[in-house]
Each structure stands twice: as structure tokens, then as C-alpha cells.
Image 1: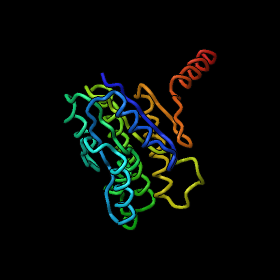
Image 2: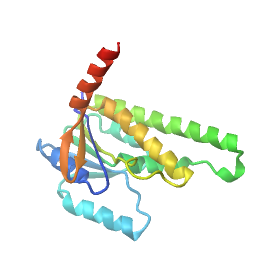
Image 3: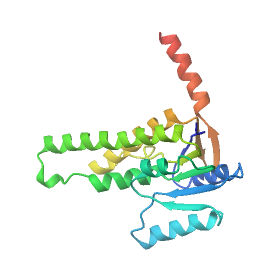
Image 4: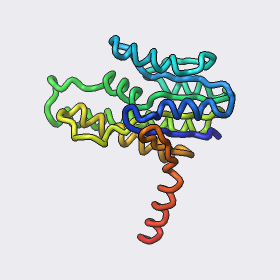
Length: 204
């Protein structure tokens, strides 16, 4: 059973650097799974910076969409799979399937969004199960995108809610969940689970 780890935090919080240190710590082979798609020079520069800070001997696989299949394909590996990041994967899935609002009634559009959310979250559940079960340790990096102001357009609000629900699903499946703030990680699942269990006992 994989020692599945989820690492979350805001932009430039240091979460990717912490994930890389954690992946390197056992001294086992590491495969870096990149979900980014490069559409412009700004994104290309971001990718190059990430590449420069990673050890040159790490394996690299680029997969923007088919994350479940990719993880299954590495089920017998020995070592660590580092996925960076979940929220870019969600972005790719969302943009690949987002319905064209112009040709739909308001009711049809709302129903299409609901179906899309359920389809993507089912993909997240599949990834969570695989990450628990496969041989290599799986470390996933994600973003907390709901801490700021409420977005001013429907697509951004839909994405914010989708990412929050996806993080909850992954967090429930992970053995360890870390939050990274200002470069410093805190393990949050053990303490949070103890508090939830206590509250549930009192409410029973």
C-alpha cells in the first residue's frame, strides 16, 4: 500500500520545494509527473525554473489529462511518484470539456456543469484510490485556490469549487496531508482527524 502524501498551499508558498525534498528523502528513484501544458513563454519560464531545481537524474513524465492511466502504468515501480500539480490537471480536464454556453439554455448549461463536475470528481476519486493502492509512494502537490476573493465570473467560481472538493477527496485518502505556508510545512491530517473524531463523538 502506497504511503500517499498530499501537499497543499497557496501560490509561491514553497509547497513544490517541500514536495521535492520529501520525495528525495528516502533515496529511492523518483519519477516527476508534470501536468502542466505550455501555451506561452511565461509558462515555459515557470517550467524551466522547476526543472532547474530538480535533480537531473529524476525521471520525468508529462501527462496533462490521463493521470489515472499513468499512475496505473507505474503501479509496480519501486520508488516515488511526485505529481505536480493536481490543480493544473483539474484545469486541463475542465478546459477540455467545458460546455459552450452560447448554444444552451440556462437550465441546460447548469445541468451540463453539474455533469462535468461529477465526471471530473469521479476521476479524482479514481486517482485517490490508485494512489492508496500502488507500490511506489505517491506525493501530490495541489493548491488552495479558495482563500482569496470570490471570483467575478462563473468559470472561475466553478473551478474554485471544483478544486476545493477535489482536495477534500484526496485529503481523505492520503495518509499524510501537509499545508505549506511561507515555506514551512505543517502536518494537518492527524490533528484535524483527532478533532473531527472528538466532535463527532460529542455529537453522537
